[in-house]
Image: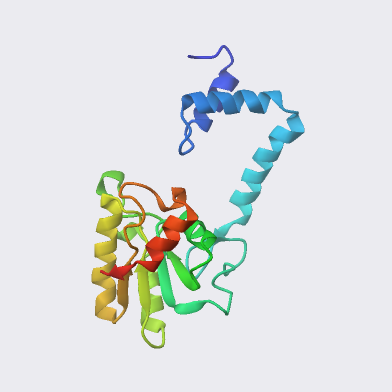
Length: 200
């Protein structure tokens, strides 16, 4: 359905581009934003603008942060010899919610996916390899990419790069159903997947 107002149509179109938001949900959101007081609706645009202007990448792990180092990388209580590799920052948040992981993270910012134009050069692998090379003693790298075809391919690719450096490479267990995303899994499932990781 097209709206008589091009402005509403443009808003629906932009909202429907968000992950997990179909056209009907975008329509509901658009009309909700038009129904609430203007000041309340504009809080959303202010928050988006502030996030885009103030957030950058942690220079060590690639997580989103307002500082040079994210809160996890700057926490001296974390075990820097246990590195959990995730696809995106939201996967890190899901693992942190379990309260069971005390290591550090590395955010790849994607997975190998030739159909989507994502090749090895598009992943943040060089900083990860540098962290492993520069660490004192044995390092365990837990590969926590999603259990999809792309996630599995990325896990095997990383294992091939990390093993020659002497790293112990493990993969999260299959507690997370194949085809699902870490961010959508409950805390117990994510915790069990971490506990049951295995050599890759």
